[in-house]
Length: 253
Image (cartoon, rainbow, N blue to C red; front, top):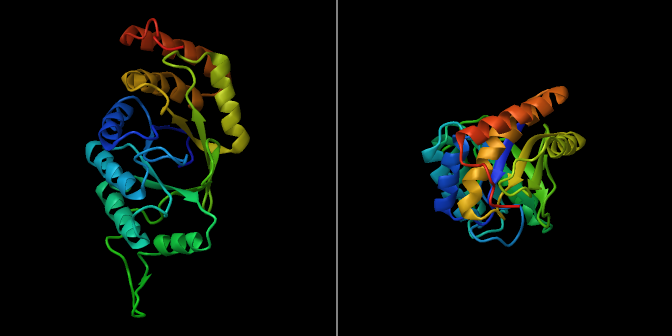
């Protein structure tokens, strides 16, 4: 989990679009596809819907990580969420991650503690304690928290590890220049983020494949390379992308 990662998010997308984007992302060097929304309000962001969409991603991908954004205040009871987490982590072979939108009500952290400890024991109404099954494949599921009112910013690890940085894609299908790539790296380093999540929700559906190609072919390698290699790597990666695709005159600005 310590290597730089690039993830994609499409808040509001329905399950069919999420499943389609998962295949595109996996084929273009993207490390993770975030399912759900860190922003309140977009459609298809109820916890139950998010978990169902994540199940679709798990079935159509092999190595893509699957962070899910949960509120613990949707239509599903905490016990149902705990069961779904175990099922999805098993289905995906241990690729599930959690991003939890913090709420201010007193019971939220109690529900969070119960869910994360569910596979050790869940307290029943009659006083018994029983483990929730199935247990996740991972010994500890990577978990981050983010303020429920946040738009874009950072998510912090629940226990230990690096932050997760969110940014909105503002380049259309244009490949960002070296200065823009350096700026992304500086912002990532300033918050100590291992994962950069790029929100493409504002990108029209018909252009999302092109944007993911830019992210995977140019942006991802430039997040991993040595600082003094960025300019030449960005140029070479861009030249390769243009030769391999129809991305000659980007339609978006």
